Length: 200
Image (cartoon, rainbow, N blue to C red; front, top):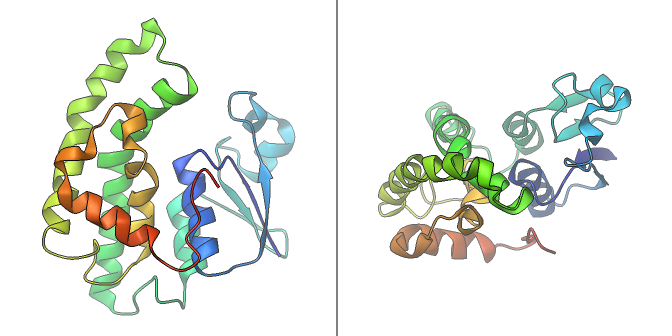
């Protein structure tokens, strides 16, 4: 059985939990307290020297880090990772977009607000994240106005990667009300069998 070290309220960790639920992959979930500094213990850094969650521990004890790498590993051979070469590259395209154009704005703003309580000394940083976050949402909205999911008409790990922080973007100060296609996409994902809510 796989072991996953993470915090379910972290979008990067929630991605893994959602995928494992959708694919009915048995696993043990081990909570790691980010604010308690638990990722910086010597024991944890043996699994991930970068001191970040999530960490997937395989049955033979080997480990895998970085949320999107874990998604690709777990989804191999399933309907959530296309076999077609171009479609698979498009999945990766959206996952790179998530890490470089989406998460640095939406996830960071959410962290400052939800985890830290929007302290005065980080208010300017929080405000500075808004434009970049809305730019990323606009790119997603444009695609989702054409297709039901980010890569064609079926759910893939590209959607799981971006759903994780998008569906809680309001916790980072982003109003999704003007993104109708994103709203419908969120509803579609939440209607899938074995869907697991972040606040379950």
